[in-house]
Length: 116
Image (cartoon, rainbow, N blue to C red; front, top):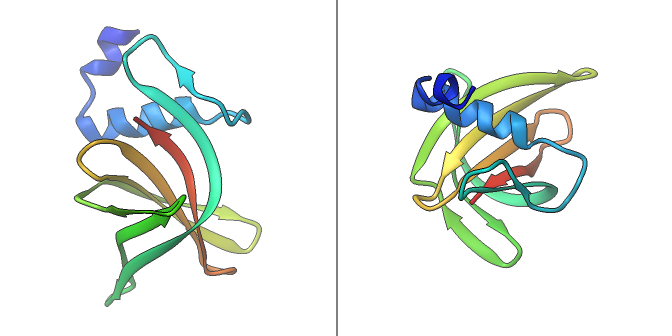
């Protein structure tokens, strides 16, 4: 399977790795590579641009007292939780990959997952 997965486009590969990292445990998950995955699900502060038409772009976020500058948005997608739309962003600070989620009903940002 590793050969099949690694031949996917980079953004799809990143998304697949984040999906695999989603567990109910808050401890590192090692899937046989030198990368560590963590399921976080903590509320965070985010600086984001809201533009037209209905564009949302996270620029930086603060988690555990540290400020992270977003260098790249590698993938984005939308899900629903009840009536709320959740906008997900796979972002990189150049060192690690993070999944951020914005809830349009509560206006709360969460850090969902980390790949470091």
